[in-house]
Image (tube, rainbow, N blue to C red; front, side, top):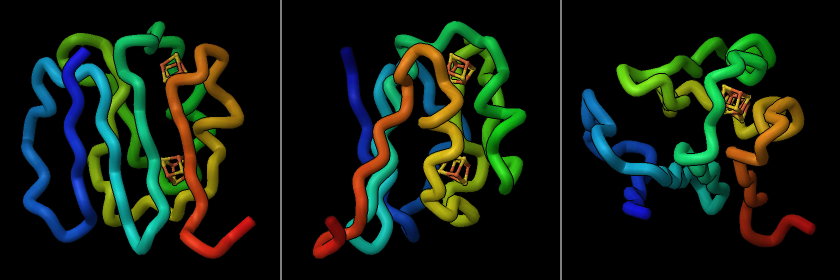
Length: 93
Ligand code: SF4
Ligand code: SF4
């Protein structure tokens, strides 16, 4: 498995490419997307209130505009394949 970490404010690659796990970080919070487990069911896309999820050219989920992510966890709650792992900001319980 290959992995990529993107911190908010970084230049985000247009194509995630072959990376199978992508971790986004912002103010101590993180959203890890284990793309290799994505079954392309679209449920998370429908659940995301910010409309920033879509399938890429390989039919794996990716975030289009991570700067708009509010780390709400709706995607993690909806995905039947546990693709999303949301970690709280440091200091939160
Ligand atoms: S954490 Fe919320 S805003 Fe961010 S991608 Fe998931 S559903 Fe969308
Ligand atoms: S809900 Fe999970 S399996 Fe379905 S498209 Fe989203 S990430 Fe993929």
